[in-house]
Image (tube, rainbow, N blue to C red):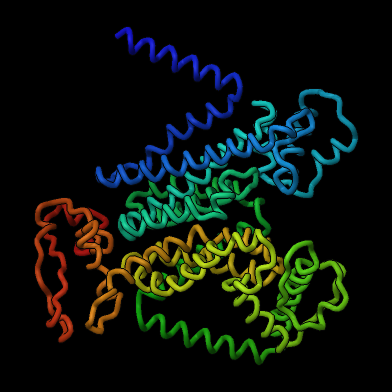
Length: 517
């Protein structure tokens, strides 16, 4: 008893000391202790241990990295240092600290007022950072911990979504990739707005799926409210953020509806081809499309002439006279616009090519670029296998990535900017790539010519037993769920009968995940 009391007293003194030095750190730890355990609900004991190991490892690595940033910046610490030397991090902190000085009545100049209330760069992240500086004081390193918590919360939201959709093995692979992908890792410990944007988008996407699958109107209303709040949070973090997210979700639902029927998909493809033919033959429609591409090309040309390693998508003649996007008079013909679009889409997946790397920093990026190539190769396999397992989640993840990737591809022209902004879609594509990896592993070494989609539900039997099994086999609610019968409907299945589930109990039929209800 005395020993426990002594430990409690020492722990309380340590917490008090840390709170005195950095109160925001204690608040972040308290929020993490309250929210992270929610990710463990419904997991098996072995899965809980794996999740704990992954989260602890990811947290410790990030804490060490933040400590390294603190040690590196120690010689620069003075009254003028804002926690970062340059870039968007320094701008966000400097603006927030100016707001703090104005609120606290400290001596300021007109320039401080200009920076603090400037419309350029104003967004919800700047407002949150300013409020935290006013409440807790200068906290550049605690703010990095807060961004770490937001990033890991977004990753856990997607983990829960993909765990229910694809099974534990793809979900854990995707979680490890998201938490330890180099660019995303740098995001998570930065002073940038990307962790908040990632958390908000993840919350919007998961809420959209939960709204569709909720069984009660009350649950749907709650999830719609959460999704609306998240959408309000991210609306000004990126240009046209709400448009891109709403377009992605709408595209995902539309693709899910088309993939539900082969005839519907064929009719949609025929209708799209006819619409493109009509659009190409109507001058007004063609003019609008080319005008939109003109605007994107102007933005791209502006990025080309910025500092750093640039790449070009337009014909060489458009780069003779450098101008800003606002002053540019660039116009494209139909052929030039077509070449611009093809080069832009290819650049998003290929740039920078290994022989295009120019600096030591870009050479250090080579392993991540090779991992990106592997992910791109796995995407078609993962999409096909994911549509078999859970079409809705697969289409929502891919649907969100498509318009965002298109916008980045058409407007970018700087390698460093592309590598940073490509991280906006990587956290959602890695789960599809993880599904593709599991499907490829499941079909490797099989001599029979059988599509991986047909066999992808069996590969996990030797591993976790329920990664790609039908949902009713994943978590049976009653003893009858474990009864297996063999159904043979074709000559191929006669040679290799596939197990299916026969569920007859009332309890199992009430379970939403059972496909045989």
